[in-house]
Length: 302
Image 1: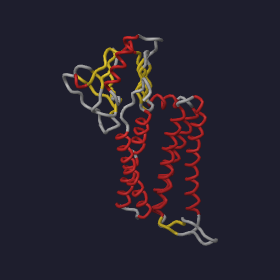
Image 2: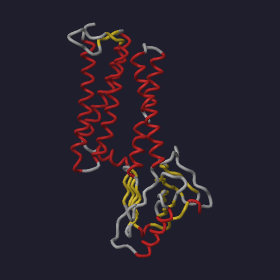
Image 3: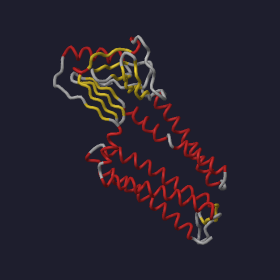
Image 4: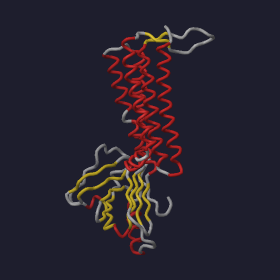
């Protein structure tokens, strides 16, 4: 461990998040495969709901796993820096009133919603401390960082070493005064939203995917079979149930969500913003290609 760095425990949290992502991905894949093999009816609707319900939380857990992997607490003579994914907090040491264990509280503090290891994130209210923001991974190593304006809960791997380093740095005094800084994940979205090109690409991708879902939903009940499948040596395309068309909007949506998140990742840095627009533009183009693919399939005579 480098001097000044006190990262939170990560192994158990990353393991649990990885297992959750794998289980949800398997359920979603099975659900989407069943869509292609099920006739339109109650079973089709159930498979669709299960697949979507399993897929929707995946980006949430992927981001939490990424945030935990990048999480760090850095303490020097000037400030305490808390990094948790896209969430960054810079606190000058002169603004910190005290750092102590949560075990010293008269009233226990409630953990945030979904308190799984590696993801103790969120805000709670405490009768003595007021609003408290969790940026921690291990409920057994929680420390309170109190400032005049806000209170944070962190969980360094070595709480005792962290407290000792803070006390020593406080006694030595600050070398260079620093400013407080708060960055939230929503800030990146807000910043990108100010770009007209970003908004155009986002809405284009959204409307293409919505249109693709609506179109596929209208085609499936009215067209029992479509020609879809591999073609070998000039043979005719295989005729399959039209329910398999639902895979096109589903795959398009998955790629669009992944592209949107990847674009936000690159948009954080000025030098990488061109890559963000390339990714978002590629998502829009891919959605258009899926739309054209469906058009080609339904215009191919069966």
